[in-house]
Length: 355
Image (cartoon, rainbow, N blue to C red; front, side, top):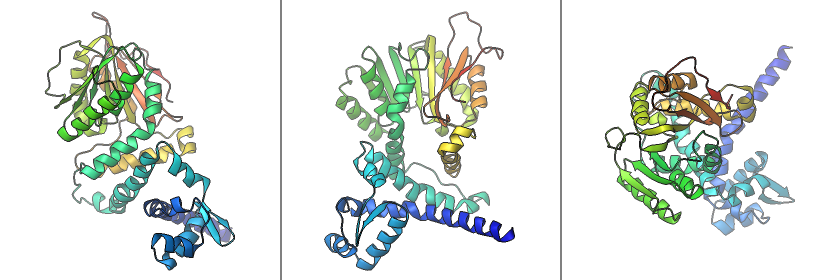
């Protein structure tokens, strides 16, 4: 029995080490054009000579990458697997490769140093240009799905005046205005360079006549009370300290029209069976830890705490809608009541589709 247990534990450790090696091997093949070249079968010698690379290292890479399942063998030749072809040919190829870069360059070093952070080492700030660009590109992986699901948030389809807080590069605002031709929208972005990118995004989507980008901070910018039918917070709640959420939500509440809705798109930590089965529960937990290793970011929200803060801000009804099975990525929505309607009632019904 002891021998069997030892063998199982050694096997598990080996699988963990395999996963550790997989991402750098995949990244090297993408960066150096190895996978692109191997759309057609090549020997190691042909591959190395065609790309001007070291034969011995190309051979070691090919053997390791074949063992990971990223390559196929045909005699002495290798060729790219179907999985890697999918990465290369997907319309989301740039986002997929940014995700691989993010895991290698951002997550890897952070998790490597986690013991030091736990001992009190300084947590530096998130926000370098490269980090921000990668985060923005990776978030586009779920954009189409999120925009489809947003239509299931009560009132979103009928919204005519939309505010996107922290709109980033403007892709969600542009996508919403492209889907709903009667809507008009405003995006708020602090960074002038990013705001300019968002304006170009609206131009490219041919919705700039119905959308505008303003530079500034929502906490201090002035907007008419009761002016918006839909306010969006897309994947940026972790930039706000949790103790600031009630004030943020109250400010949003005051700028929503009667029956207007706030839609908060966010990952959440989830341990339900579906999330564990599809692997998204582990991803969310690791992303939460990655956020916490920065001095200016905060962890993923607890759904019940978030609902409580929305109630305290005065919202009459809340609910959530899963973007993918398992609910790790979801919209948590809150609707303002009619004038004179009782709000903040803990007995009120909350709708949920994400559990």
